[in-house]
Length: 421
Ligand code: UD1
Image 1 (cartoon, rainbow, N blue to C red):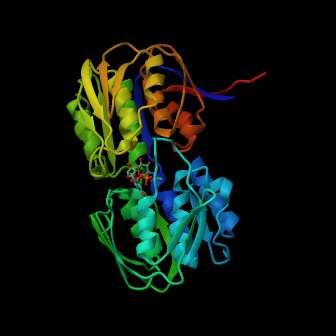
Image 2: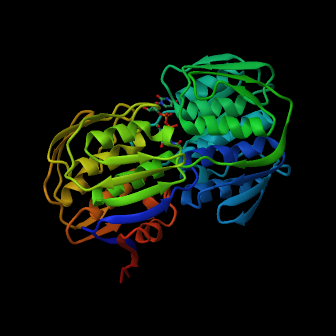
Image 3: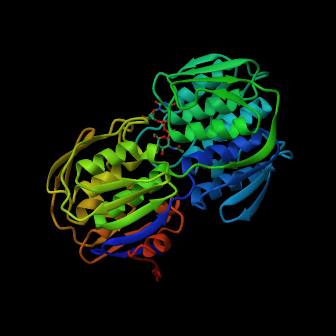
């Protein structure tokens, strides 16, 4: 059995590099199915979720070449099936992007209902609404989504709720459709802009990504090209919170500072010193942390994917903080694990009330999902003694080589293999 063993209580010092954005990569890789030519994609994070999506493309018949650890080339010209492998697709949430991409390319798609982190109900009704508006029929049969359209035709789609996945999936389906598609009340996350930039670099005509109205004028075909994925806003934020939790002085490199504005404002409220550069942010924490309140929201609000991490940090702040989760129904399951380390947190509906300032003590804990796992690493770095994090496989879904990279800035963290026998 694999575990991560952390000896806490040591400040972090030095420089750490942010990798390419996971949530952009898991959409841009399926988007390569729409391209008639070779796509070279750089700054691809070498993480489990990317591995699974590449496996799915290979299964479909795409030729995937690993140029180096973070660069791949995809040639989808030989793909002839619109049916995604059930087992792989049901393992991760982002497999839903194969629906939009295969529907866009073949006019039909069969993909298992998505799996992934469980934050309560994770519907795809808005994706389906978009596909139907473009002229597809969509049925859910035996755990599979089956979408069919003789011919996709542009339309206006209003998203009743801001959804990252639905916005990206409709972009994918509409890129090669006939005429204009307009997505109203679209999500504005940086990875949506990145997907649109990738497709535009291949010849698509997408305007307005990053605002709440996106216009896609369908084109006949996309040609190959080269593209580099943006830095991961959530990974960068996790490193910034780690530096604030452990104390010390860390320069987080390869960042787009604008993407970090909501986190920077909260860290400053807590008394953390922040210095912004063109593509890096320095985080210095020398004094005690102050409590604050946080509410998650779609971009540019505070990201839900940094909610567990900021809760872990607030357990260290002297006083009461409230963190309200407004994106997902059920994203506080990890709180029980933080309590094992001595955190005082109670959850009332959508809000976690954190009575901070207790000293945390290392203990055996379990990562329950990707960002919950990151929150445990944060708490472990600030705890006395040894924390053993079980199921680090969840952390590996989104963070490449976490123990190696954190060791380089002074953390004592190693992967330990324990025999079950
Ligand atoms: C993506 C991210 C995830 C992040 C989330 C919100 C990926 C692979 N995952 O997930 O890490 O937490 O954005 O930033 O990029 N909803 C509906 N109907 C739908 C779709 C969504 O009601 O058809 C609701 C969801 O239940 C949720 C909210 O909309 O309450 C936001 O979900 P959405 O933005 O779609 O999240 P994902 O794209 O699944």
